[in-house]
Image (cartoon, rainbow over all chains, first blue to last red; front, side, top):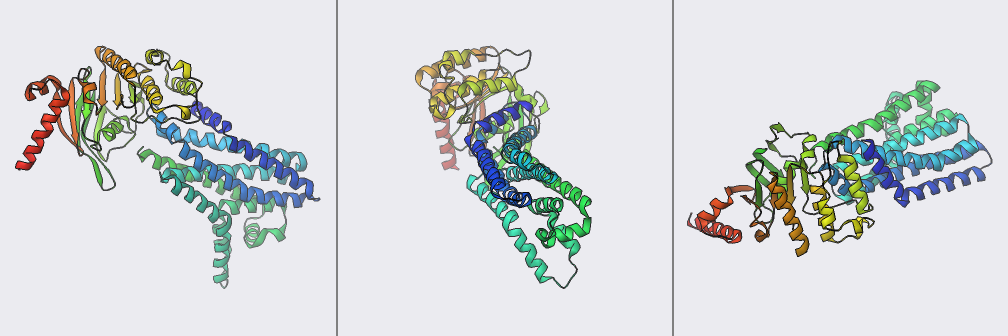
Length: 255
Length: 242
């Protein structure tokens, strides 16, 4: 299994896109911290990078990688290698490479120029988000064999999680504003890893004004530290569940 | 060695395999023939666990292969279209497969690599290779671990005459060592002196499974291609009569 992970990682690192992603992250994070005078402003700008760009790149890159690895998968499955191990190794290979890229690209500037506990939380959240969206990408790629469809699914997922979801929650809250919605809102948050990530960092930053409605309720509902633990665990579930579903489906796929 | 029992497989509405049962024993060289789209490759992929049959069982050395992978260490598979990771060089492909598959007590059989003179091209990336060279890589990989069972899907398609001869010689040699060999091919003249059994597929049905000498006697034709043509004709005749 470790051998397969090694081959996947070597293959990805040879691919220039991950390198470009690392350099892009490095450039953007250094410029953010150099332009913004106050560090919390810098962190907020970084937050947008982590919440928008990291999921997008992780999803799209992993989806395309999965489709390009069809040959690799076919080749290895005619060898004495178990399907479950193969898919897990590919997942681990992709997410490790993406996480390394993120840690070098965003982690180094965060720790060097900021170094606060919030920066560390942001780093962890970014790593977790990367792993979650690679897992979602693997699921999407296992569901359909059609490459165009698979990339379409990936883009839809990103649009949904990063942009659409907040609008939907707002709409629901607006429509049902006569009812007590506190616990419902907590559930809504848990249904979106990006939302969870945002709340996690904002809870740590402690900027009530930036938290928005969901964040404020979250804070009220859980208090600070419980909220952080809850958000982390739910994100872990977001990582594991899509991967498990993908493994189940992959067991039955025809090649 | 391999016993397939009432295998059915459909892709959506299309029934690809209908109630296929086949027994393959050690030392046999079996040719799977039939028109395009008759289910030969799907059947082979079922044997390898790449395609999962809708129902029916496949036993390999008396063990059900469902969700197993270890039995594949006794199989060398040459796919019809060898598809390889484009960015890897040929040398890396060989290294990787050897690294992943080799046991302590196994020797690798590099005869075909040498015969095809692949070492000269080890530095080339897979995407730059021609179809024929890829076939050579597939063939070399299939024979690399000295497997008990060889499954060759259209082995000679795309190979030049010299390479075809090398490959046929190698198959003959392995057959003499008592290995089970499964070959699909449309080039019947290639199979003439290689195989001992003929299995004929048509539209997902297994029409017959016969020993080649029996077939020759029955049809009175020495050449396999003529014998098959004879059978296909008589089948057609029967259909029109019915």
